Length: 526
Image (tube, rainbow, N blue to C red; front, side, top):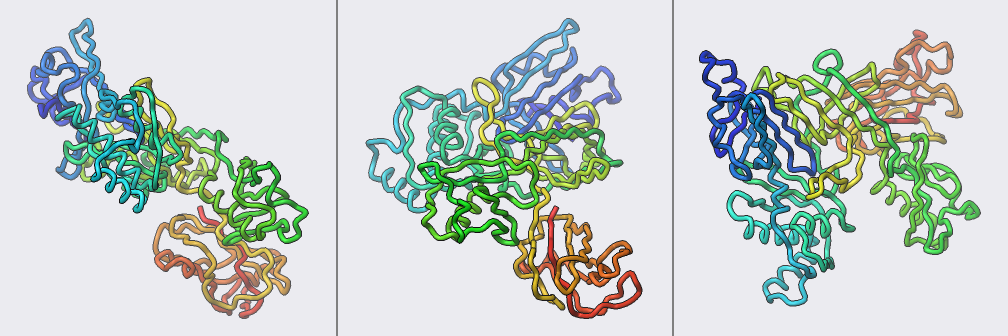
C-alpha cells in the first residue's frame, strides 16, 4: 500500500477513499502512477478530483512530494520529488506531474576546469593522495561534487553521497564547458573508463546517491515470488543480441590473433575451472552457449607468452565482460502487499524469482524498473533484465549495458576424459553452486567412461537434496549401472557441495552396482 504526501500533508491514502462521508475527498485521487527504475529519479503522476482539499495548496517546484510504502505498520520512503507540471481539466480535476530528487542535480552547475585541480590546498592534496592509495578516488569525487551541489541547492534539494563500490586510483578529468552537476557526474564517473551506474535511494527523508560497479552489487531478493497460476498475469520476453558477447578473439596491437592454431602448446579443447571455456581456432568461447557473438579484443599478451598466460588473460576478460544475450522481461503481476501490509511490496534493485514452467522460465531477475498503478488495486508492471537508464536534462539515456538476469544456465563442471572411477567423495573442483536453484548432474558408467550416461535436473532452492540416477527406467542395460546417489549440500563451502555416494545402490533393473566404474561427468547450474 502506498501513500502520497505534499510537505507532510496527506494527499492520498487508499484506506480513506470512498469513506463514510462522500463529500470528504481527503486522501482521495482519481488515478495515480508511480514509475521507479535503477538509474532514474522516478516519475509520479496523480489526479485530484475537484474539491480535494489539497488543490490550491500544491505548488510548482515546491513541496516536497513524497510517496511512502506501508509495511507492517511502518512507512518507507520510495519517492521524493517536486511538481513540475499542473493541468486543470474541464471538470476542475487537477493532474500533477512530478520528478524525482535525482533530477535536482540539473539545477546546479560545475564551472569549467580539471580534476584534480591544478591549484589546491595542502589538506585537499593530502586527501586526494590518501584516496589514490586506498583506491577510493571515485568515492571522493562523488562526495566533492555532491557537496558543491548541496551548497548551491540548499535545504530541500540536498543529496548525500551513499555507498560506492567502484574503485579507482589517480584519475584525470577535464571539461571546458559549463555542465550541470548531473552531466559532470556522468562524464567523470559512469560514462568514463570507470563504468558503473548511479542509483538514488532514501532513508527517511534523506536522499543518498549510490555508485555501483555492476549489477552484481544487487544480491537481495524480493520476498514475493512470481508464480504461474498464482500472481502472474502476463509476461513478455524480448531476446536481443545487442552489444553483448559470449566469446572472444584476442589479438595483439598489430591485429594478429593470440590463440593461433599453429602454436602446438595451445591446442583446441576445454580450458578453465570446470572446463567452462572451449578454444576453437582463434576464438575462446563459453561452453554451453549457442549463436556465439565474438568480440575482437586487443590484449597486452603476445603469442610468445606461455600458453597458460594467454588462456588465463582470455578467460579473465570473458569472466569480467561477457554476457548472455539480453533477456528483457516485462511482467504484469499481482502485488500481494495490496491485500496484506505485512507482505513486502516489489522493490527496484532487488531480485525476483519467476517460476513459469509453461514458458520455460525458472530464473531470478533483477527488478530494473517498476510501474505501479496506485488506484488499480494490486496491479504492477515489472521491467526485468533491461539496461540501466538514467535521467538527464534531455531525457533518459543508457549509461551501462549489463545483462540483469541473475540466473542463466551455466556449465559448472565437465569431465570430458574421465579415467578414474569415483567410488565416493566430493568434487572439489566444482565452483560454488549455492547461487543456482536448478542443478543438473550427469553420471557416467562404463569401463571406458565414454557411454552409459544418466542425468537428472533437481530443484534445490536451499539446504540439501539427494539425487538417485536415473529418474526413469533405461533400456540400456549398461546405463543402469550409472544409478548412483549424488548429494547436493548448498550449505557446505564451495568445492564440498556435491558428493558421489558409495556403491550398492539399487538400480532400476532391481540389481545393485558396485563401487567401480562410476564418475560424475557434467554439472550445470540454472
